[in-house]
Image 1 (cartoon, one colour):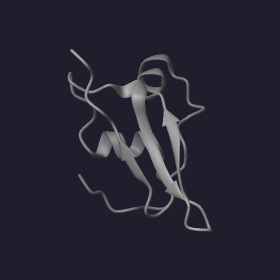
Image 2: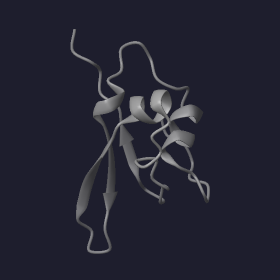
Image 3: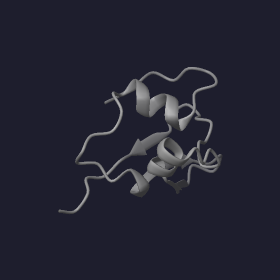
Image 4: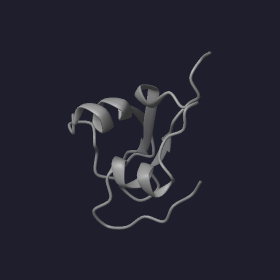
Amino acid sequence: STIPYRDGMTVIDIVLEAGGLTEFSAPNRALLYRKNSDGVEKAYSIRLKDILNKGKLTPNYPLQPADVITVPERNF
């Protein structure tokens, strides 16, 4: 889903606003895609399960306009 950017948003804010995780998601394989000032896109690992279940807030990045977060499905 697409969610409008608001100043001060973090990774967790956007995940919760999107409805949270499902039983099929692989939260520790989530990625944040961000373009730098040169237009080069870089991917950052986000361990959502660690943030949500263990309180590890280090990867709870502040978001910037045009950031994209993906949460893949887990393998069964």
